[in-house]
Amino acid sequence: MPSRRTGWSRAPSRLAELTARVGASCLDLTESNPTRAGLEAPDLVALLGDGRGARYAPEPLGHPMAREAVAGYYAARGVTIDPSRVVITASTSEAYAWLFKLLADPGDTVLVPSPSYPLLPYLADLESVRLERYPLLREERWRIDLAAVERALVATRARAVTVVHPGNPTGAFTRRDEAEALAALARRHDAALVVDEVFADYPAGPTLPADRLPTFAGTTGGLTFIMSGLSKVALLPQLKLGWIVVGGEDEALVAEALARLEIVADSYLSVGTPVQLALPDLLAAVPRMQARARRRLAQNLEALDAALFAAGPESPLRRVPFDGGFYALVEVPRTRSDDEWLERTLEAGVLVHPGYAYDMPGPGVVVMSLLTDEASFAEGLARAVPLWARG
Image (cartoon, rainbow, N blue to C red; front, side):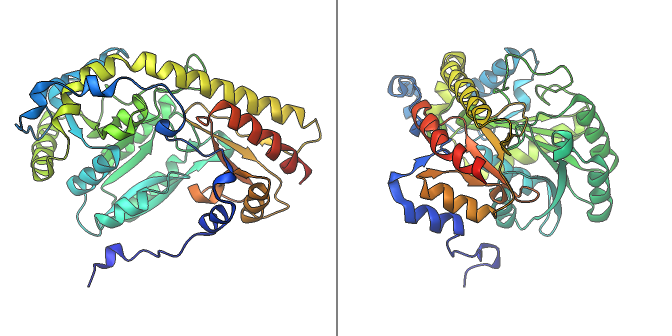
């Protein structure tokens, strides 16, 4: 018989049922897949055509060229990273799985933020790890509830604290004082920090506020693992390459973590050679590739704010402030349940996500992707905003 860890319910969710009923005619304002969003892509055939890729000579922690390219990516952001502390993975999801294996025994606890991306419970189940959620304080622009983190660390003896930076879907970059306090808490309670930074290249404005931390990479403190990858950095999820940067002041502890990760990586050898050889050129092209995405994110955000303003001063609609990322949250009247709003919005031919899909505290929030193509996004707003404003 299959294991209990894979015994998830496969019954369709209400969201899936309603979406299936509407079908392909719906304007999808949740589209965050760059390969379906009409964004320019580089000539991958040329970039992946290095003849050396025909030879299989696996390096468990990653090809030296790839590890150096990741270090160069951070150097361009003003952060010095030792390439020997870089581990190449097939994706951020795989990085999570490897880190859960490294840090936790079956039944151990890892702390994760709430609200957050709904993939994490599945990854934890597959590694037989328990998740304990700590709240992000919505009324304080998603500030981390540090007191709740400490209580959870004491109560569960958690092996790691996960930070999504910026949050998904909240878009909140961690404040500098939060990051310092969180690192101190983790170190005091013998827990590692696991930081997911896949959206860190997409602040909502030209610069981050001074009190926000651009990246955990290069910060000092206890054992820290920073994850990112091509899926969002280069808008190329189909190439299946991510990375982990291992940080920490204790050189012996970092070395032990890297040695153990090398055995984990050697057991899978999941990253293809051609994409690793192409990584220097792919990362060199990132500024051009991100420029189109940034323009779209900014244009759609402007369109959303204009549509909410046009709804009038008596409108109950409000965009939740955020620092960056791909997603926007809109507060809608609590006169209807999230599923009722979902159904009414779908009847208007527009798909958004209900807040509960991301463990949002309380009803009355819809989630949409600012990466949606501009024409579809504008038309979707024209249909949905007046509907929401009427309550």
